[in-house]
Image (cartoon, rainbow, N blue to C red; front, side):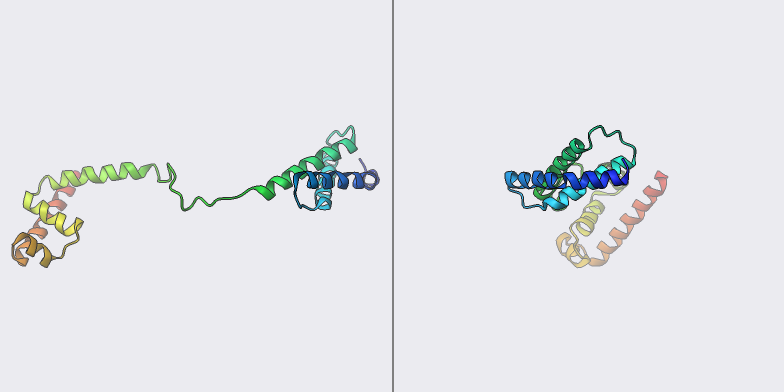
Length: 166
């Protein structure tokens, strides 16, 4: 289709396409601009003809494109996007997160096996419960210096176990 043929066709069918789009607007209760829809449909028709798309009946194709554009515009107006950032989703954590937790727990258990029960208890109070040296001394009834030495010894023992793992 040449440019002159397209201009003649668009002048001849523009009113029909605008009427079609307006009827769709009334029937759907949609307040979109019919002229924008028709303009978009005609641009699409021109692009198809430029790409040598086989067009048997350009008027019928223009009507079909206009109907499609009306439906697309209507749907675009009625789509509601709900942000999912605040919602917990299954699979929202990386696949490695679970295995990393299990690996850390395995290493922790291996390293802590070399510790005595009292050293393990002191490490739990310090690292997991977040108690200060004074608070640990008050809970256990041991002097602060003794708690400090026991924690240092436990850490040293754990480091040696980690070095053996390599």
